View 1 (cartoon, one colour):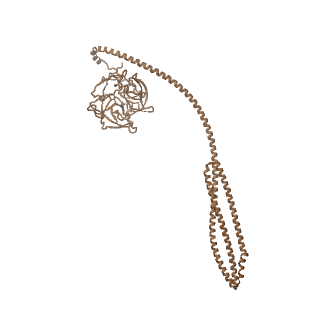
View 2 (cartoon, one colour):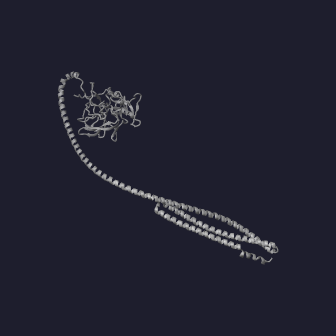
View 3 (cartoon, rainbow, N blue to C red):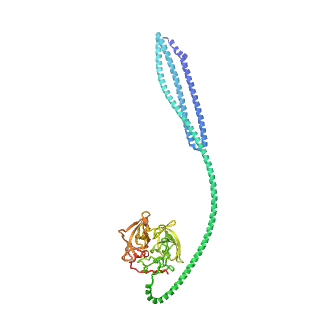
Length: 594
């Protein structure tokens, strides 16, 4: 076998093979296609840059129109930076993919060349087999075939790897394209959202302008109204000032007249005192004459009393608690005429309470207490106090008056009567709410004791307090005020000690008191109908008749006095409950009406 015959084959294959040239043209065409793709991608990128610039312009416009989307624009810049970063990464990956594609195309071209050479070798091998003469050539061809087979196997392995890598790069390219499309879609959505926000801002701006115009119009109207009101207020203030000046002048005139009246009243009191002194001198002179005539008249007095008819006698009052000099001074045992009158709410029920006809010949007597002095002096009174006065119906202290003024030089008081807001039936309520009635100045009012009271607005409230002693109507019922036949005098009484404070829900608790034998008006706790203490509900408060002044006893005052008992004021206890007392009594002379 000649070596010269085998050398031209590879040379002709490499230089004159048209398949190799065709594969090179195809590779160049692919390179051109790849370059075109790069141009398209570059044009897309330029389009993206333009859109990006437009979006930035839109952002600038939105920032100028409203500052409310500033946060959104900042967020959008972050998204834009992220999109640029992703875009840069996509471009880098795309370049690497293109390079790998080029390498794969080169390897495919080389594989085609190897396949072409293999076909040529097979053709030459078949030719050599037909000839069968040149053994050296066959051996050489076999060696070449083996080499080509190994090379082809290697190329197949490389092609498989390249195919796998190409598939991976293709999938990566697809995912990048999908992400690119998603970003573009999101960008369009953001752009639409920005457009909607811009429209909303425009609408709100228009609405705000309309509201500003309405507000300006309202402000103008309100300013005009306030100006007119201010003018009216100034006019009213001027009128009010003029009226105040008139009232001030009128008040000054009234004060002047009041001072004149006070001076006249002082002069009248002085004249009255002078007349009283003259009357006293005359009375002393008459007393001397009466002593001379007393012996002559003694033997005629008994006969005259038997023949005299019962005279009309005025109602007498219990002993006054005031003991000061004329005209209110009274020695123990003397009584002055009272000027008490019922309030306006009780006038209809008592047409003539000042006069009572007494058919019995026995005069009313008021015993002295055993241990304590219940008398009051002029120093006991102060402005604002509420005092109890005697009711002419049964001489019990259930009238109330508030001290308005204490006139020391004239020895008189200015008082305002308190009138109950409850019923008008007899007897008048002793507790509850009261209002102010008429006022008067007098030196002949019969005061019993001071009452604790509270003032709320224009009303005065008086209720029993814990530790006080009160008198209850003994035969009182809830229907008492609607049955006048049950209200006849003399009333029956139960005396009690108040053991709890008044509660607007539960009422008030009291304990019954019974008189201690051997004393005028000493009372201690005692059972009545098997009960010592009871609760009086709120709707039974009219059961209280009047408060009875008292002193609590210690038991050391005298033998037989129970500790914790009370000495009641005899002037606030009906005489029927003191009738059995063996004490010194003072006679009250009745006033005979001529």
